[in-house]
Image: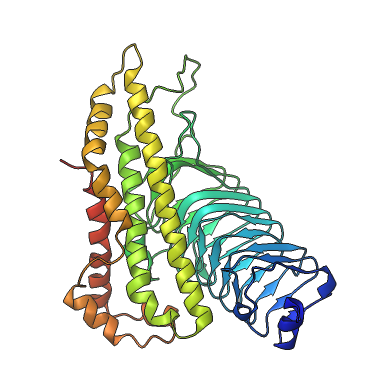
Length: 396
């Protein structure tokens, strides 16, 4: 019996099935009854998993390769590869979702949005005509109070120095996972130059190009796109100050490590009840490992570029901090690699063990939002410990 016949017989709805391509490597057992697949769609990959109540290709052909879809996901049209979508995620038409993306519950992107190595926590919403690569965004308490990326927004993730040590942290993991933080607003027709960092409750008006970091939460922030007009010689291989770049990269990596542990310890209570949810859990962890691998690769490239910068002749007023980074990188790289690669991190703090054992494991969003304040504080401290460990990895 063909794959299409198997799917149809088990209750998967294939509309005009003759136009739908299902590759030989697809495991039909991982596509659940009730899923709707529209004409022109192409499905492939042994790791592909589609839950019931998902709707694929309602607005045009959609290509899915090795993605995991939880219940209620809707992908209107476009291309989706090695990405994981949790309950209720929606993508508009013309999406281009490349590997290393994780979209949590009820997050969404409108039409013509491109992403890669990007993570949205619950309810985060992106408008249309957007390009987001190498960033993590959190914030908001529900569908009517969500973090927002306005239409025609770009996260700039490639530098004239030919590096991508440019991940941006919009919110954070240790507090963001509690689903009780103020939403973040990034106004449309704007952008962010990575690596950047902004806290919860920040509002960046439309038309702004954001650079650097901002520490104080709950503020409307506006600053000049560039400090002054200029026209001067520029050497793409020569770096200037790098302390902020290194700090923001380590902070981003630390947040990914923290979220990886959150999935292994807390999320596992909610995502192992059915085989479909377990595949989404495994997919989410795989995405996080891919993101961590990518960040180490880009940091390695950045370190090599700094060594090259130091070798250039001529005056270098930033030589001291660049040499200090190279020295720390030589000593600390293996430690950072170990921290990124570690899966089992030993016994949990006793208080976290008590919290985990007390979780019902039924409704993730409502139960996490209902954690008592002392439990929430303990969880945040536990997750921050991973961030701090990574941030200290290149120290003396």
